Amino acid sequence: MSLAALAAAAVLLAIERACYVAIGRASEAFLALCARWGLGRRGGPTAAVERLFYAFKALQFGVFIAWCYVHGGGFPLPARNDPLVIALALALAVAGQILVVATFYRLGRTGVFFGDQLGFAVPRCREFPFSLLAHPQYVGTLLTIWGGFLLVRFPHEDWYALPVLETIYYLGGMWLEVPRRYGARYASISFTMRSRAVRLTEGSERSRPT
Image (cartoon, rainbow, N blue to C red; front, side):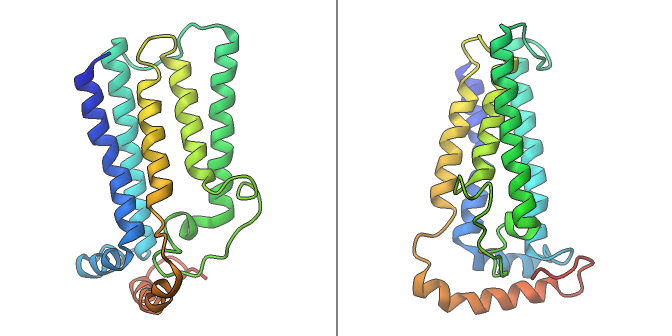
């Protein structure tokens, strides 16, 4: 396994998580940045986060493909494995995507893309998948990553490296992205954040979130 490739992957994959932690914990600063640079003019601040999301997914897939190319010598394709391994890999990936799709269905784009932290009224959901998990989108993504690498890289010695790395990053994100001290401080800034979010959304082609 290439340690240089692992170090490069660790740096590149950390960018997404660090960005989301910054948005989640410094949402006022992100709203101010959106207003100053006009990032929220097309759909509001949550649309800006959504655009970041797709850019980060492209980066993530690029890192995964590059990893498989470095260690496998080509584009990642399903390896010839025991049928049980293939079945397990597919089961993990399918279960993961069910959690991700269900999260988007329950919360909508506004809820998924930090709407609550950015001042929008996002009702608390207690239905599936939130009836089972506090962070179903992240758990689903991790299941998909583990299933994908199990399918294309197992049993090579490098197959678990990026899934382990991503597990550490996503677990850190679950803990760090939501400020632990909402209480009085959150109540004192919520009106300001909501006002900024609404101003950034005015004039958008998207309907205003409710």
